[in-house]
Length: 317
Image 1 (cartoon, helix red, strand yellow):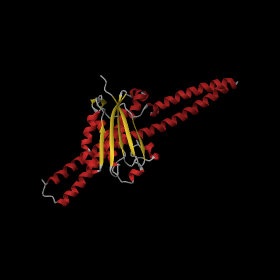
Image 2 (cartoon, rainbow, N blue to C red):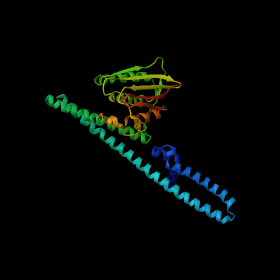
Image 3 (cartoon, rainbow, N blue to C red):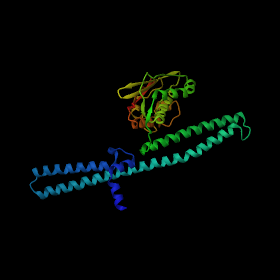
Image 4 (cartoon, rainbow, N blue to C red):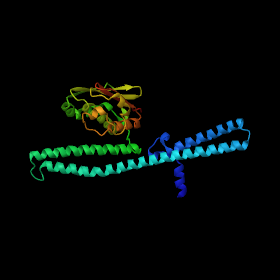
């Protein structure tokens, strides 16, 4: 049992997966890299020492001191990284557990309110129904936040599943436009889509890509403060499908643009309008697109609007 534990500790790839980190962010791999640097430094010190120091014992002492110092520094740095990554892992697990536990009571609350609003438990006055609608809307918002937190937790722990299959991305976009039609009209926003013709199928997880599209379209409509327009475009570029969504909204200040895909970040000019949002949508979108083998980016100008784009690999037989 003890031997198995030691072997698991020596398995750098397994340790990195446990923390949900890439190799160049993993403490164990960084320690290995530091070890290679230390060996290289020792060899360089030995070569230089033998050329400029005549006494072999002095050279050996210098190298020994150098080795001890470098290993101590490497150990301290690696242990610090390990503590940080372990704390991050525990935080992600905590968020995951809490999110799972919150879903059931929220669902029960939503069901109870719908039951009361139906009048089956007794007559409800119009004024009371309005309060129930407010409660239902807020429960729905809480449910969306819990779902976003759960998705973020899965991304951070590298457990977000992707069930890849072929599908027409244009069909997904059109269905989403129909669902957002009422919201767009209420916001005085015209939504246009140019899907091209005879486009090949994409190859990834449709529900996950639908979530990406929902986040992008919801942001585009929500951040147009007056009458405006959202234009979407889909075309083929090489071995990828290229999707673009352009809006005439408030735009993103230049100083905020480098933070736009970070968790919980919301631009200051957006906060001035007090729009809803958790700051998780674009972080989730970026993680899903990159996990699907694509790329995502944007360009924006404050007061003019924003254009977000992403690519997805084409299905090949």
